[in-house]
Image 1 (cartoon, helix red, strand yellow):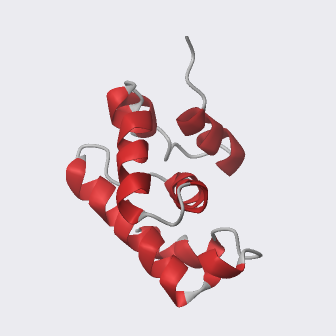
Image 2 (tube, helix red, strand yellow):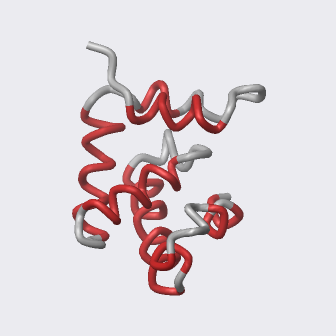
Length: 102
């Protein structure tokens, strides 16, 4: 499912668009979907994973664990499961994952 989103992820960024970047992004998304099969992959998680990779020195492991902390540990998995709802804009979906209401 996420394979279609990989080439669309930050296309202007040279590293994300490279074979190495696409592979790292695929690994993080696949690892998360295996770790949390009830959530799996939701549209726009690719942008979150790519940003984490870029901010965390391109470390797949660190990006994976921060993504787990954002989505799983902070109770966002129930919201992430709803991100594929038709009619929700990609921007709103991304913000739903990133923003945590107190």
